[in-house]
Length: 245
Image 1: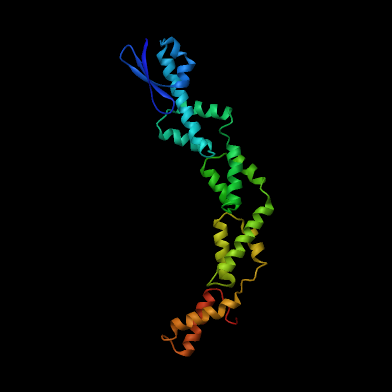
Image 2 (image 1 turned 120 degrees about the vertical axis):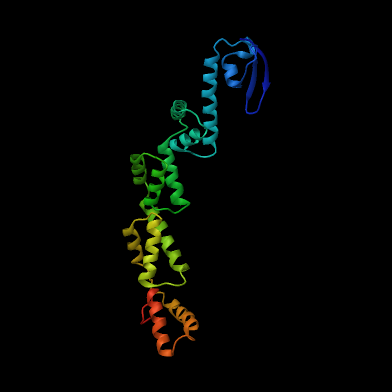
């Protein structure tokens, strides 16, 4: 079938009009590959359409991963949402892997660096996040082994110091437990947290008087002096302050 004319579209695509009243949309690279500008005739329409589809899926994949590094699973989910069939998705991903555009090990390596340096995550949370992204467990374990332990401990101590400094209401074991719980959720190992906490002063003696005064103002009109002292000390105890502070 002969080509009657071309109409230029956006994103390097052309609408190609054929002499049988059909029209197809082809990427310019496919037009050049089959030398259609000169021949102006199509001998195997099915093959051209197949190659064009392959190229278009590859092209949109490249554009998707060009904005930021993506895992194989992220790209796969993106293409599935576009209702592209599984074979074409697999072929595209395999080609991208061969060309070095998709590499889950590299993805895991940079992901770990970002989460440590920018988000201050601990190893356990990083592992959980990578597993959600369907990164192979062995890759995760191997890359986490390459983490500089000193960097993790420095981040951990920095977070603990900030937590103690910003604390306005707690002391002792209560403050310790709150910090511990928060940092376990952030992915740090319990033993590392406790080791650093054991070197810190959590008594918060300076805060005791401030908290006592605040509670005194709050409850002084509700209780007698004897009851008031007992109530305040109980509440301070629940916040981690010792009665003999």
